[in-house]
Amino acid sequence: MTTHAGLTNESSPGKGNKSCPVCAQGYHSIYQCPIFMQATPKDRKTLIIKAKLCLNCLWYSHHTNQCSSIKVCKLCKLKHHILLHITSDHTSQYH
Ligand SMILES: [Zn+2]
Ligand SMILES: [Zn+2]
Ligand SMILES: [Zn+2]
Image 1 (cartoon, helix red, strand yellow):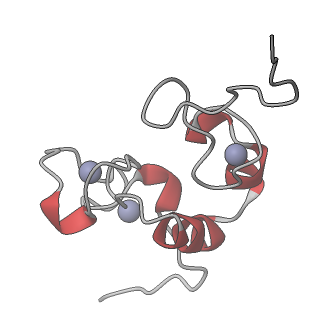
Image 2: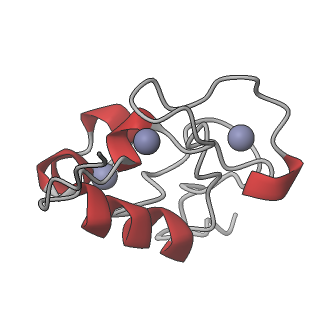
């Protein structure tokens, strides 16, 4: 009898957990990603673009322009996630 040792079926693509799209170092959701949550909104946006996620709902199955979510940023009412909202430092005042 021959036994093939050493080869274990560890990865089953298309099934089970997806590693974090942002840091790829764990199986947490993006909201639990320490790298994402500790980043500034500006850096978060870069991370999302790099990970090819939707800027509006942070999901990975579609692009931002295909997002069917009706949610908008609560702060500025534009189509991006509130975690990606960049507050401008300079307070522009209109008379
Ligand atoms: Zn992560
Ligand atoms: Zn989306
Ligand atoms: Zn906003």
